[in-house]
Amino acid sequence: MSPKKDWVTETINSNTVVIFSKTYCPYCKMAKE
Image 1 (cartoon, one colour):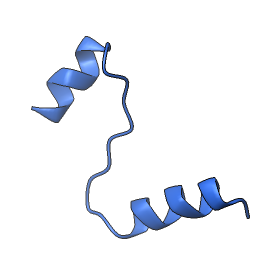
Image 2: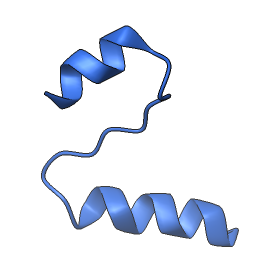
Image 3: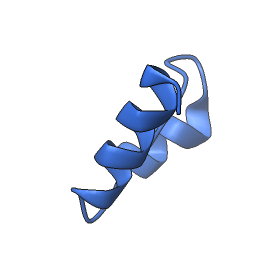
Image 4: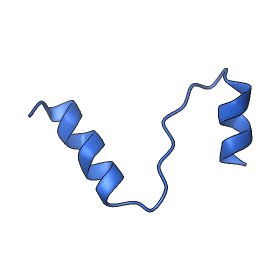
């Protein structure tokens, strides 16, 4: 696997909740709060 894919997989597996978002997305901002 690529290092980026390994990082994403490891991050998802080691956390209960993970949000990958854009700073300009209003829906992402609401989900983080």
